Amino acid sequence: MKLVLASTRDPAAKNITARLLELYDFEKSPTSPNAHRCGDVMLVTTASSITQITEPPMDVEEVIVASRHASESGRPTLTVHVPGKLEKMELAEASPPTVKTALKALLDMRDELGVTYDVSLEATHHGPTQLNVPVTFVEVGSSPEQWRDEKAGEAVARAIMAAATTSIKCRHAIGLGGPHYAPRHTDVVLHTDVGVGHILPKYASIDEALLEQAIVRTRGGIELLVLDWKGMSSEQRQISQRVASKLSIQALRRREILSQAKV
Image (cartoon, rainbow, N blue to C red):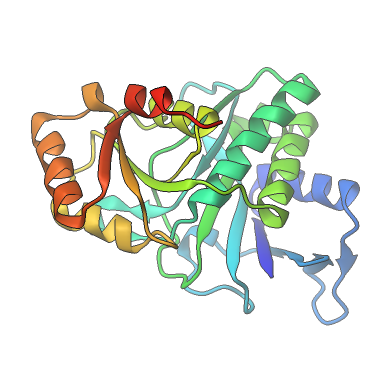
């Protein structure tokens, strides 16, 4: 069973939850007033801070979080990311197929609904990091106006259900380098057969231990590292090459992956 988790303190999550209940056949749980079920998907609302939770509220195989995204620019944006506290080397478990499915669905829904939002992956950031199942955040941002936008809420709701009920097969990867909004990694995920889970951006203190932890915390392992070559320091490039050689995995730039794209 997949769990969709939403905070009642988050206006975007409340918007997304309302759209989920409108659009899909969720039935209220007879045992919990804050839970609804639709097939193999459970929707649970909580007053707790989701970034601080240490275990799922029930036995599930994966968690998808409906959430707001905030930025100073206030730019309308729909985002997907895996949580993790890079500075503490505490990473949630990542599911690249879930991230890829949600991102592609966000793009499709944005175009179908005619909302003028950017669609982007984000670098790994914040919690929760201690759950023993994969965690993916799907968000609407970046200001209160967008958090309450029903069409944006619908786009995220549909992307969450796509990710919870289908799984795009892909080559599992970790993204390295670039800025927080990861445009090159977003491009790779949308236009190739690669799925990226954790993204370790240029501003992070990337070392071999952090990169190997990101590999360990990717369900199903990884096949390659996706490098934003120009968005990496020379030291980060060397680290990525050493780890790739040590673990016998590929380390490829965006243009190299696009040139061999299968989708």
